[in-house]
Length: 250
Length: 254
Image (cartoon, rainbow over all chains, first blue to last red; front, top):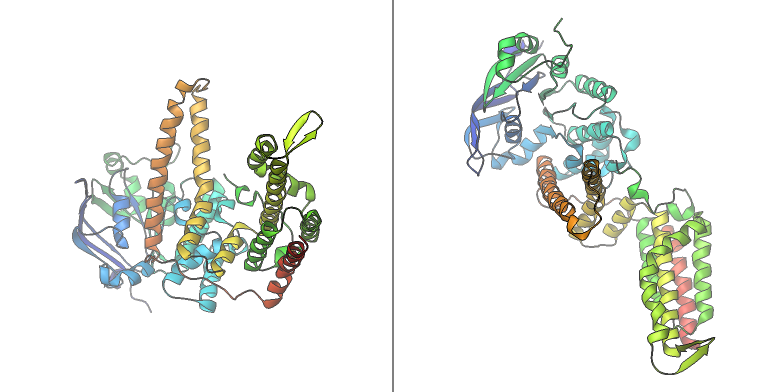
C-alpha cells in the first residue's frame, strides 16, 4: 500500500528561491513550494508575479540566485542538468516555440535523442508519447500543418517522450477552442503525472488541480485546495484573480 | 495559419518517383544539371532528348505538365537578361525581319534559355516529388554539413511562422486605415519590419530555451535512419546516366 500523500517524499522541493534578472529587476523573493508525487498543482497569479521565472528555474534554464530546487531528491545544478531536464518536462505556452523540427516525429524524438536513445528504443518512445496524446497519425507531417490544438498536444508529446517525472504546463488552455481545451484536460488527467500548471484559466485550474498556489510579486501568498482559494473573495481580489463572468462555485 | 505553405511545390502522389529515397533523387538532379550545363550549345538534338527525359520523368511521377510549366515562371527575371543579348551582343550580325541581331548574342541567349529552363524544370520536378522534410533528410544523408542542414530546416520551419506574423501585422495596419500610396508613407512598413525583426529575435531565444529544456547541448542529434536501398540509387541514377551518355555523345560529335 502506498503511504498517504503527506508522508511520501516530495517530488519537487523549492526552498527560498530568489532571483533577479541581469537588468536588476527582481522577480522572485524567496519561493517555497513542495509537491508530492502524483499531485497536480495550479500556479495562479497576475501577470508579472514571477510564475514563468519560477518555471524556468525548475529545469535550470534560469539560476544563479538564492535558494535550492530538487526534483525527486536530485538538486538542480549544472552537474545534474541532463538528468534534471529529463525529469522536468516543460510544455511552453506557444507550441511554435517548442516544435522546430521538420516533422512531428523528429521533434518528439529530439528530447530522447539528446538523452542518447537511438534506433528501436527511440522509435518506441516516440510512438508511445504520440499515442498518449492521440497524435500518432500526424507523425510524418510538418508541425505548421497542424491545428493549434494539435500542436499543443504534440508539444506535450515532445516532453512525454523523455519520460518526465514532473510535467510543467505553461498556460495549457491558451488559444485553444473549447473542445481542444477539454480534450487537452482529458489528456492531462489520463497521464496522471505529477503536474505543475501555470494558468489564468481558473475554471481549468479547478477542473484539473486539486491544489493551487497563488503567486504575487515574487512570493507564494496562498497555498491550499483550489476550490477554497477560488472561494476566498478577499484573496482573489488582492491578487487580481477573478472567475469569468457567470461562474459561481457550486 | 500557414497550412499548405510547405507544400507549395509538392504534388501529392505515390508514384515510383515519389517513393525513391530523397538522397538518390537529389544526387540524380544535381548530376542531370551538371550534364546539361556541360553539353555544347550547338547540340540541339541533345537538348531535345533532355526535354524528353524531363517529360518522361514527369509522366512517371504523375506530375501534371501544366503545373510543371507554371513553376518555370520563377526563371523569368533571368531570361529577361538573356532576351537582351541578341540586341546588345557584338560581332557578326544577322537580319531577322527588320531587326539586326548579333549571332553571338543569339547563341548566348539560347544557351541561357535552354540550360536554365532544363535546370529549373529538373529542380521543380524534384520539389514536386519530394517533401521539404525529405529533402532535408536527403541532404543530411549526402553529408551536407550539419549546421547548414539545421539552418535550412529552421528557415523552412519558421519561414511560415514569420510570414504569418507579417501578414497579421499588415492586416492590423490596414485595419486602422493605413493605405500607403506615396514613398513617404512607408514609415509604418519600416517600423513594422523593425518590430518583426525584434519579435523574430525574441522567438529565436524562446525556441532556444525550449531546446535547452529538452536536453539540447549544442549538437542536433543524429537521427539518420537506414541508408537508401541500392535499387533506389540504381533507379534514380538512370536519369543522369542517360543524360551523361547523351552529353558525351554531343561533346564527341561537336
